[in-house]
Image (cartoon, rainbow, N blue to C red; front, side, top):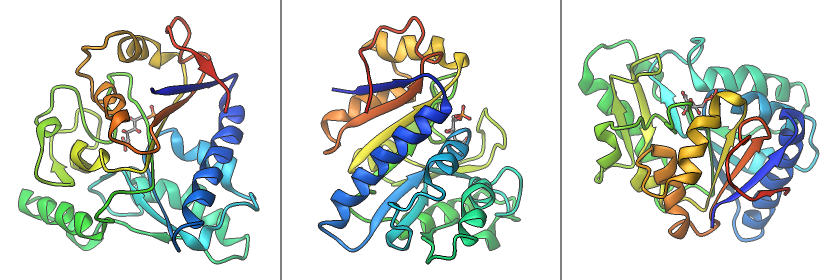
Length: 251
Ligand SMILES: O=C(O)[C@H](O)[C@@H](O)[C@H](O)[C@H](O)COP(=O)(O)O
């Protein structure tokens, strides 16, 4: 079953999501040395910054951070997911005077080529750096069109069945060149957690939770709940789920 945790605003989500992440981290670190986590772009990053910075329970030095998707741009570009994460989380964290996480980025030396083969190489190299058996906790966003990672409605990458990471050159959300985890690899995740806020998500969430036949990428990921050991859950604000028929829980 896909669980939906609903809150008044982003501050409340940030606090509860941090509690959820710490619980996942502690459960994993009780069994192995490192906690692997994937982060998406968009609004998620500021919610993470709010909940994780200055939080004494985060064992940053044991974290290995990947990106659920990344835009093929230099790492300091305004469109880079790593760049946004660096600005909002890693730089402030550096002032906290502790050992930081390991962060796995795309190979920046390849982003200037316009050759599709090079993007393919970026995807292959990123795939080679991923844990073979899946990432412990994958944090996802959901676009108003139902996309997640850089998996867009109706896109051919939804049926990619051989790679764990794929390149695309035609993302409808700019910038067009991106790499993304595939559904095949997402299915190996320890736990998947979506974060979605704001009224622009209402319509799509109605379909995702109301239409069991939906082919939207986020709905397909909900359908992985059976494969994913720790399940799939959502952290949302009340305005994203207004009028959506779901049981609203609190974590
Ligand atoms: O890099 C990206 O574009 C993302 O990873 C993308 O999948 C994002 O998570 C959604 O578009 C939701 O973004 P918002 O939360 O900002 O709406």
